[in-house]
Structures are given as C-alpha cells and as structure tokens.
Length: 210
Image (cartoon, rainbow, N blue to C red):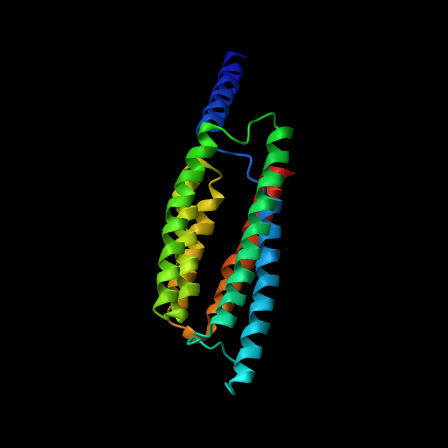
C-alpha cells in the first residue's frame, strides 16, 4: 500500500512540475485548422502565380521563381498574411478555451517564455525573407519560411508539448530539401504548413485534447 501511495505521490509531483514549466494548453485542433488554412492559401497562391505566368507566356506547370512584379508579390503577401492571421486567431481562441476547461491561465510566465522563444526566430526569419524579396531571391523565400518556422517550433518546444519539437525538425528538413527545387517552393510550403500541421495537429488532438 505504501509503495502504491509513493508512486501516486511521485506522479502528482511530476505533473505539477510539468505544468509549472510547460504550457500545455496548446490545442491540437488549432493545428489541424491552421493546416487547412495553409492548403487553401496555397491553392489561391497557385492560382495567382498561374495567372501571372500565363499572362507572361511562361510554362504554368512550375512556379516562376523569378517573379518580381509588384502586383503579384503584394497579392501573394496578402494571401500569406491572411493565412497567418486566421491561424493565430484560431490558435488563441481554441487554446484559451482549453486553458479555461483545465482551470489554467492562458497568459502565464510559462506561456510568455514559450511565446518569446517562438517569436525570436520567427521575426528574424520574417526580416530575412523581406531582404530576400528586396534582392529578388524569390525562390529562397518558401524554403526560408519553412526553416525559420521550424527553428521557432524547436526553440519553443522546451516550454510546451514535446510534439512541437518533431514538427519543427520536420519543417527544417523540408525547408533544406526545398532549397534544391526552386520551381516547387509552393508545393513544399503546402506540405510543411499544410500537411504537417494537419498531421501533427491530429496527433496532438488525440493525445492531449480527447
């Protein structure tokens, strides 16, 4: 009996320590929805690029890695911004609801540390991608977004669910592979931000949300 009670006490202590050091209210469903938004955004971006290529008499089977036209660039940035806003808003809403159900605070020291560790590589990557756009290295933007997003997930994973680490590593590897396929950046972007989010979001949902 004492051995069983000792094990239960240890388990409770581990849970308390885990809750105090990690933000556990991330919603798996928000990851699934973020992936869906990314796939929809990739579809609209593909349509925009195809229309531009057709207007320029370029083979529409592949992307045009040399796009510099201001109108199409602004359109693509608008699509990316829309996907980002929807994903962030959904993550905040669903994580807030999950935190309420668990009696936890969404805005705590742990969540602040997680957010800070996530944003530093992400903001750095965003500025770097703007520099790539400035110098017309458009073909490297999709790989760079995947790599820096992966680094953000990896950096934040020590303050939240461990599955985020695997998501980060997968995106880093995918981004590095994408550097060798300049005409297929959008496809890799859809896989990383779309398929991977749906996959890992589903895993997190069944492991932690059900």
